[in-house]
Image (tube, rainbow, N blue to C red; front, top):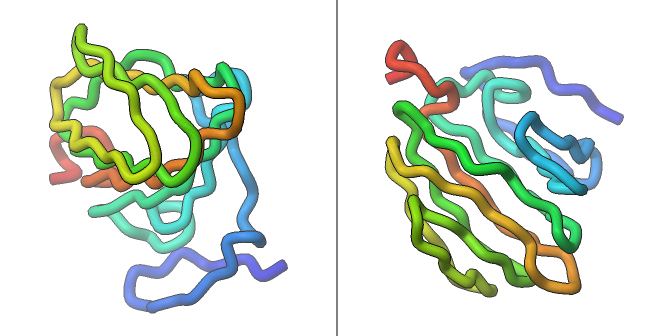
Length: 130
């Protein structure tokens, strides 16, 4: 397995299969993600790009970002996304933009895996990251 050194001035091509699945803080029940591009492997401060796969009933708990913006794009499965007090059923090819300050969570409510892409900018959730 090739381990990338963190560099911001180098383009790279990577095989997703070589990257480990990780359950990040605030994610539960098999809510796994692979960090594709971000601070950990590319040294990026502006963008965090991940693919996530949530097992049935897995979820990310309700949370709010101070400065980060997020986009979720569903590839497979279905789940319920909450935005403040509104619930939205998300299915393949549905996407959402979440600006800073909006409470949100995402739960796999289906019987198969929920697979989606996540783009977050900036990569860190604090004012200095802007």
